[in-house]
Length: 77
Length: 77
Image (cartoon, rainbow over all chains, first blue to last red; front, top):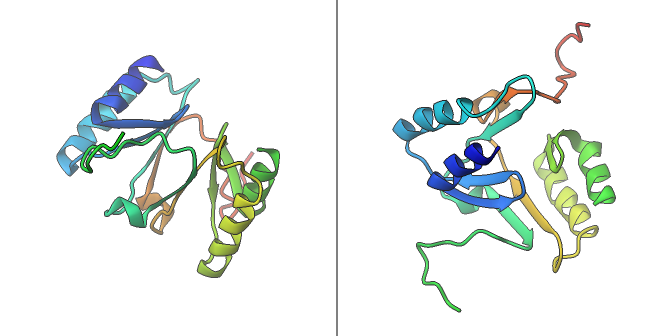
């Protein structure tokens, strides 16, 4: 699953152990799915892709620890 | 996380180790979130809720092993 994780990190971020949030265009989307499929064994692995509406805030609610870093907002340390 | 899992199973199914797909009405949705929050420690746990569009087929693509059982369709063994 390391290659799947790398493919996801090329388009987004890991937010939980086996959950990634990625932002891709319509064109990138099919190429992205194709790349993911090249790295899984359909008899052993389970891959679920959820398409969310934009803006992200209307589709995602986060409670507790949030690993996601929004690089479009100023990074405050 | 056992109580969170049980709350999710009351409204849906586990599809991966820490991923559940639930079907709730607008009214149930807030009560459901409230119930989940009662069972997590915000300093230690990470809860992400993704709202998907209906019909589900437009929002979810599944590849490989699929644990989800669609009880609305005839069960064929």
